[in-house]
Length: 246
Image (cartoon, rainbow, N blue to C red; front, side):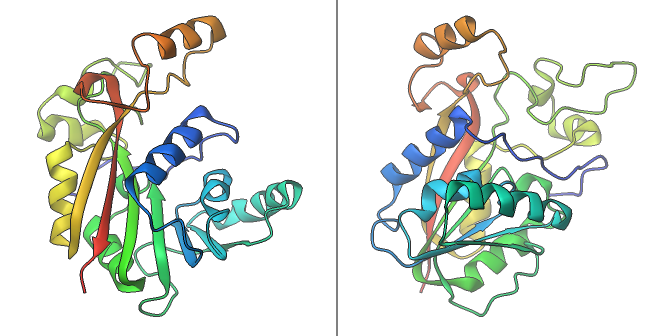
């Protein structure tokens, strides 16, 4: 998959987001690797608010993020939440600073679409996972109505044009700020990196961007109800899980 011309680094989802809860519930339903202690690496951890959900199931967790300048602020947030088994460090997903077969589980949410070389990242994840270790990740879904990361389109000040993500890939990638994926694409990419038992689910759009709380709740209870969906255009995110081949 080619380098996007306008690719940008990711931004962390605000603490307390409904989407954090949704990811967490779906992850627990997809894997038993979070039930027996061990170690967790969260790549692209951002403000570590998602890391906290998973850290309660392991002996220790490490969050790594490329945006070093934010880590002090995020450490303060962890101190306020009394998350004692999480360590945050700066570093690149394309060159993880860990020995081979270090972690029992690795998570990376809405991160893969931003990196220059996604194959290198997945190979690094495979390297630092223990045998039978689990990767849990999420990426933006191509068939969601809106381009979730926006696009730098000419003459259009609003960067979330409906159905832009449905355009042919060549056109999308010429203007988009991040990659997007179909379910079959992400399955293929994960499998090519040496993982097995690849599972994928479509996460229902959380409607976090809807500012009117009553409308937001109505949409969540009617059209966008449930954590997962089988209807592609109701899903903003693909959630995937796989094991390391031994």
